[in-house]
Image 1 (tube, rainbow, N blue to C red):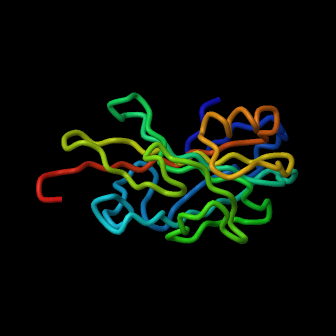
Image 2: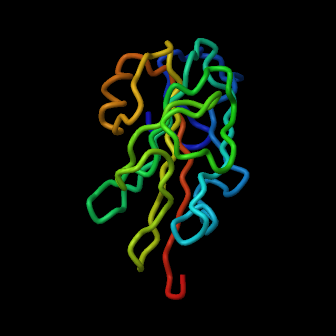
Image 3: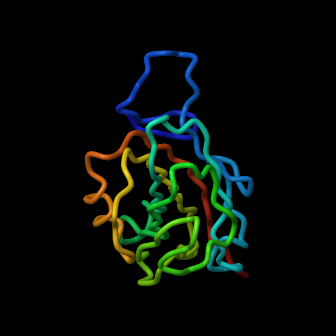
Length: 176
């Protein structure tokens, strides 16, 4: 039940093959494509714009975790965002690095030790994958700011209706 763009993990399956699938996209890059430099530590280090569709009807909030599974440590968290209102269907480019962003959500700590987005900054060499994992939740959860990804995942256990993943790639090369 692994989710990629266009496929969904859901405990609320309808059995209707005509039902649209929960999907996450970015106007800045396609699934599996290169993330533009402006969204990385080599550029302006702004969060990319994201949009989603066909969330389960019972969704009350969203949570987003962005990680690099190819990091030398085995996994590196780039963004933890939660308490995203259930009626939202997008995130703008450049979400401010504040604990609470009005109308957008609450942010946790990334593995750089800061709040908000920390763009790709892999060691020079091979390309790394960056997984944008969006989770639809069945209830609004009263969670404090500055949670780490593992704490968030523990807090939302049992509340995930569906999830979808968008993957971008980034490779540092000489001269960047």
